Length: 491
Ligand code: GLU
Image 1 (cartoon, protein in one colour):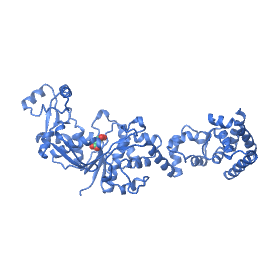
Image 2 (tube, rainbow, N blue to C red; image 1 turned 30 degrees about the horizontal axis):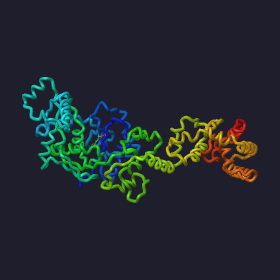
Image 3 (cartoon, protein in one colour; image 1 turned 45 degrees about the vertical axis):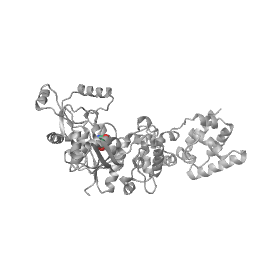
Image 4 (cartoon, rainbow, N blue to C red; image 1 turned 135 degrees about the vertical axis):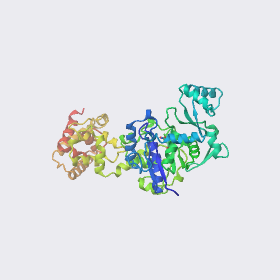
């Protein structure tokens, strides 16, 4: 078998979509599994919708996900350039070849004329295909139209190509994921391969690029199946080797509609901003249509690559379960080394004076608050009480705890006793245990009720991180200041 060469060919009309990331991953895995090459090609033929910002975002997102390409716009390779807009001088030669062999023809129809054709089709309740009005124009007729100032588009002659290479109007191909697929190509109109301004259309440029870049397998979303028939015919008409195709099911939102921004993040960079780890994202998208043979879902890309088989990809649509992604993300956060986590959390802590904490205090704070984090961004609301002298008391903590007589008595006792405590972690553990035991024995107060009072006064909340850790980080002065203040302000 010749070398496996696959590609991801995003159009930079937006930030890298999570669905494109999955397509990229499956191509990448297929390349790894088969010792092949993974290629990045930027399809920026639609100049109006393209921007450098989106191109940068595509590069950065793929890199962040670890989907490094062997050939591409930045790293080059033997079949470059890998950006379509830099390849415009390549395409006309192939258009000419099709014109010469009669598989393409010039079309002088104006947009108004085409609109009229479509309108008539709608009125007659039939599916629209181009009328082929320009298929057999004589040279004189063409000259006349040119003299009127009309510039022709070039159309591909579908029926002619189909009849030249197949017995009937039905075109069939064996999809790597979906098995045999077929279509009656008489339903495909003669489509434009080069616009009147000379620019190639997607379906044409993609074939030339895939052929020249020696792409062996085209793995992409099933929304491209209708394009595949057109592309196969162009490959054949040009005498180029047709690659194998594999079409992945769509990714749907939990409500079964198309995944869109109203469901949550859709761009990889937005997920990252929200506090998802790229390791979790890539692991999660691998499971959209594919399942590991051992049933172990959480595993790094390297291990997935060993296990990956394209024939095992489900041909149906997958549901993007944000909750499952969150669950995976929390798992990956738990596995992060503390120093990495400390760095990764910093962007979510910019509203706090982090410099008030020593490195030791910051480490401790992360250690005692990391457990419940689902997203890195959850840290923002988890830590306000570690900063400043005063603390904002939440309504629930005030009303259900601090306003009770028990809490007031506990706090008065806490302040008087804690004044004399040595504030080391070990000692605080011991002292707090004694303190809880005292209130249990002397007044029958449950240990957790005792601790609620202390916690509410010092953190302003009814639950949170390990209390001893909090006291250690805040220090004796701030802890006692807050406890005293809760006594004074209580009703
Ligand atoms: N530029 C196309 C897209 O972003 C790529 C299609 C293909 O893989 O052929 O949808």
